[in-house]
Amino acid sequence: MNKVIEFFSASWEEVRFNVTWPKVSDLQSSTTLVLVGSLIFAAVVGLMDFVFENALNLLYQSF
Image 1 (cartoon, one colour):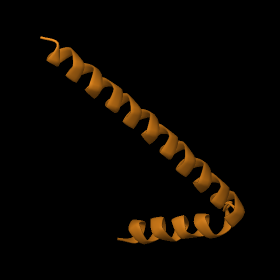
Image 2: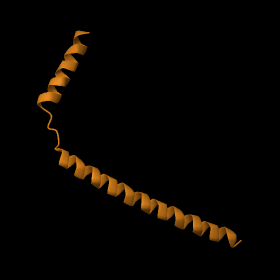
Image 3: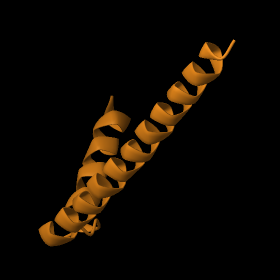
């Protein structure tokens, strides 16, 4: 049990004194970048799905 307490104590000390936390403005810009990238990726995948669905429907209707 003593090792568990020592582990959590050392972990908490590491987080309080040795971790460099990013600024809020950095987090906001990173979040915006991830959001825009995700929306672009979703749009590309949606467009590919639309094109393939219509192409396959056209192919199936020709037979």
